[in-house]
Length: 69
Image 1 (tube, rainbow, N blue to C red):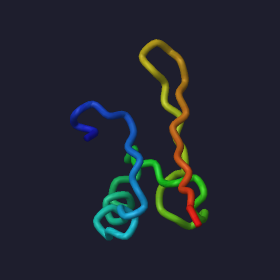
Image 2 (cartoon, one colour):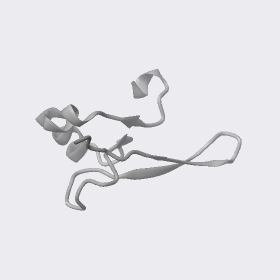
Image 3 (cartoon, helix red, strand yellow):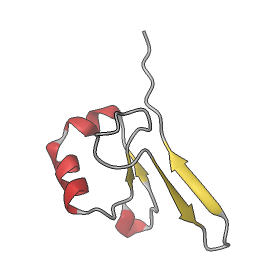
Image 4 (cartoon, helix red, strand yellow):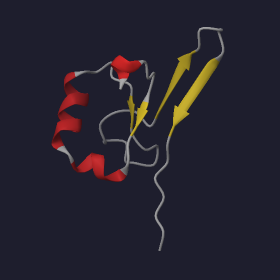
C-alpha cells in the first residue's frame, strides 16, 4: 500500500495476530503502520504518527480499537 502512495496504514484487530506484521515492524523501524493507540506501551509500533502534508499542514493519524459487548 505504501508503494501505491499511502502515507500511513491502520489495520484491523486480526492483523495483530499475524507474526509477519510484528516482524516487519521490528525489522523496519521507519514503517508507517499505525497500531491502535489504546494497545499497551510495550506493543510494537506507534499509536499515532504526525505527517507533514505537501502544503505544510501537519496531519495526525491514529486509531483506537473498541469492543462491543
